[in-house]
Amino acid sequence: MNARQSSTRGLASILALVTLSVLTLILASVLQHNALRRGELKREREAAAALSLADSGVDEALHRLAASPEGGRVTRTTDRGGYEAVWRPLRETPGTYEIVSRGRSGAGAGAVVRIVRAKAAQADAGARLTAWEASGEAP
Image (cartoon, rainbow, N blue to C red; front, side, top):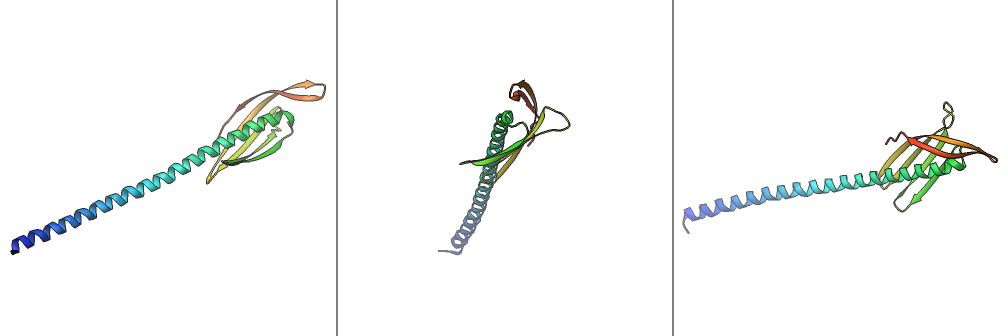
C-alpha cells in the first residue's frame, strides 16, 4: 500500500466519522423534539378533559339549583379525574346565580364560571325554578 492510498483511506474514515456524528446529532434532536411534543400533547389533552369535567360540574349544578336555590356544592370523582361545582345566589341581582366549577384530570386543571339567570314560578310548596339562561363562560 502506498502513501497516497493510505492518505485517501484516512480521509475517507474521517469523513465517514464526521458524517455519522452529524447524523447522530440530527437524530438526537428529532427524538428530543418528539418527546417534548408528546408531553405537550398529553398536557393539552388533560387540560381539555379538565374543562370538560368542569362543564359537567356546571351541568350538575344547574340541575341541583332547582332543588337548592339557596346555594350548594357538589363534588364528583370519575375514572378520568373529577370536579367540584359551587353555586350561590348573587345578592345584588335577585334571581341570578353564580356557578363556579373546577375540573381536574391528571396534571391538567380547568375552571368554568357561569352566571345564571333563573326564572322561578310560585307553587303551593314555595318557589320552584322553572327555567334558566346561562352565560359567561371563562377558563
